[in-house]
Length: 447
Image (cartoon, rainbow, N blue to C red; front, top):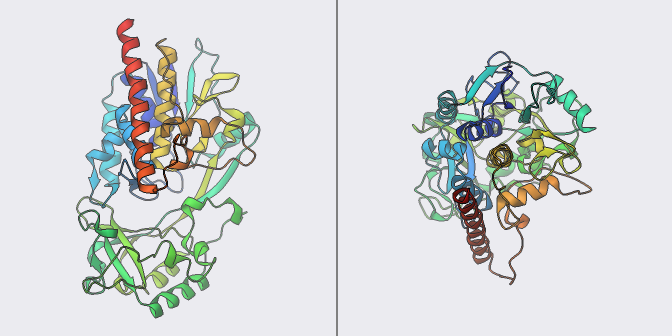
């Protein structure tokens, strides 16, 4: 590594790319180290930075009805490169922000390659670097849910332990292999522009599907325990094991969907575009650990998918995170060793957007420190602040956290209507964020 590198960022996923870009764009000499293409994890295929390995959806884009939509807007206002990339490469997906995953990672890679003050290196980091050498380097560890074994072991040693669970992804099929005589297009409750393909099932078809799903052979998982599965990425077959009607009230719920005759099906699988051209589709909510031949056999029981061409089967992989409340400060730095910073899903935030947000927040706080400028303060009225609180507040059973309105500070007056309550929380969050940005602007002018 260069001796005059001020910040070293390890990991070129969403969090690492976001952090490195923010730092370099603010004039801080930064090196971003990513082990690809010299070495790949079992879930990665592309040489680009910011590769998405599960869904191509960054969830809802509705600022006033969904906390993840609100988080995206907070990040836009904070200058997020990742959300900029998503907005630039989005594909139709109703109220969700879904992207063409290849164009998305290519956009991120191009931004990084052309960013002044940023050096990109390809090598595997085997241990946490010594931050005392070379005048006191800062290190951001953003190695994601698939941290390499050697570094993972060193992180466990450094933090005094580690936690892990398993994460699953859904299959992708060819669009022209969907039997549209057995499907219809449309978004739930009529929202959006008809971007989803809906694959209905009758009562008989649904229960036959569930029976075969439960009987299907699963891929072997070493030392696998059910308690390690994160609820937000539950494999389809695990959900189905909780009751034969579970899927009909969850992943396959028909609520808000009506076929061309105006009838609501008994159960519905939704397909979402994987790319801008609409040539590939993702089976929404079909994260699975079934063996590949079993996925084709069972999922092809859905009438619209009887001739489906599977371009990628669902897979399950390890996800790793640290006991952050015992280890991290609110700015994502390590307690008593503040030159070491963690960011991304390894901190216990769960989801693409949340991971990128942690990288952005870690970089903002470090930039404040290095430039000796007034520090940003994000409180629990904002999603950003609530996530910071989550990873730094001691709790008995620490679990990964998605963005949700429940982690925000409650409104002073109770609003019974959920829609109105969410809208009020979102409006207050954006006002609080703007107050902070205005204070930062005033402080900069004062300098």
